[in-house]
Length: 177
Ligand SMILES: [Zn+2]
Image 1 (cartoon, rainbow, N blue to C red):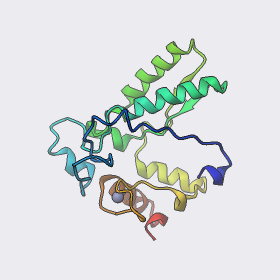
Image 2 (tube, rainbow, N blue to C red):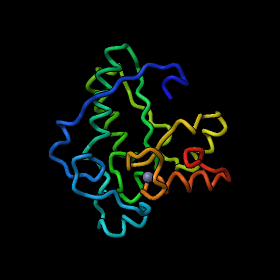
Image 3 (cartoon, rainbow, N blue to C red):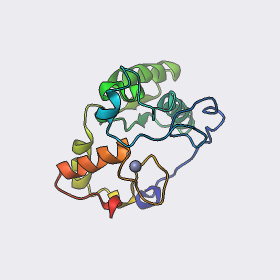
Image 4 (cartoon, helix red, strand yellow):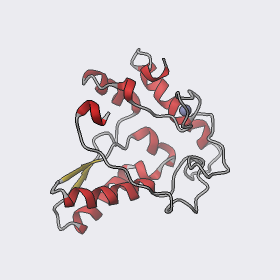
């Protein structure tokens, strides 16, 4: 995707930070990634995040992005959180409250030089897919699956969310071909 749009990317090794977590998304975890929708998973979490919630990961990403952005003279961080992930407290670090709180921290901690924008924070995945189709987003290059296989599994929460988002727009998910 970076190549497609001709933009620079960077990666961070956060392995030591997450060494103490047993979140099912982490490669050292003893937990299985659940094969059901978020709505089904939330029935048994009693208000707590789902097991694929990586502890404060997005807070870490945004903090790292703020350091990089400030160093490069940028003024805005765009954060792709969306409403499906925040619904029912599945991922509390995707909520509008979280975005507002992090934005306030970033603004305060950078002397007003930097802010966070989260244009999809009130959108569901179907609305995002629709906008992406309009903008000719190369969805065949994108990935949602939590299993880390050669192809999307089609069974984990994020695969199901994505499949339904494409279905809602009357198109098939090119990643599933
Ligand atoms: Zn999957």
